[in-house]
Image 1 (cartoon, rainbow, N blue to C red):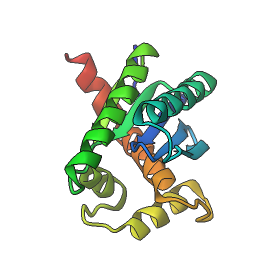
Image 2 (image 1 turned 180 degrees about the vertical axis):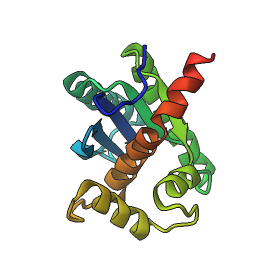
Image 3 (image 1 turned 45 degrees about the horizontal axis):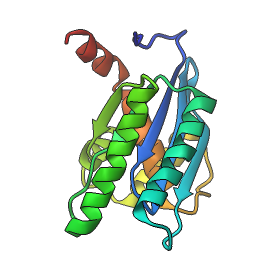
Length: 175
């Protein structure tokens, strides 16, 4: 059972920016003193590998991260459909693998659109990548050192769930 946030409660979230070439992953804690980035990475697959092998590699790496850090919930960025249909299908299949792993590890999944993430963090749904990255760095007191946007997107997704945690937990409890 999930618990609502209080000044003494620590909550650990895994945030994921889905993709099959690059998959952003972040582990973020909310503590009584604020949000803390515990771990982040961008998992990459080899373009020469079959799609099946790429999903297997991502799934194994992601499951290892879940087992190591033991988050309480998974925040997942929703599919952005402004890409070609073939790519969208593969990203959707990657999301399916992620949702399967969440279920296997008893993690509730919370979906957020890019617009929801930008609105939650910056107050403006049309914020650009640079604005989101700057805010993530400011909130977590980080130097902008991540090489790929996917990592920042995963962090932003986790932060969005943490910001809306009590609302989401109450919604789950009412079902």
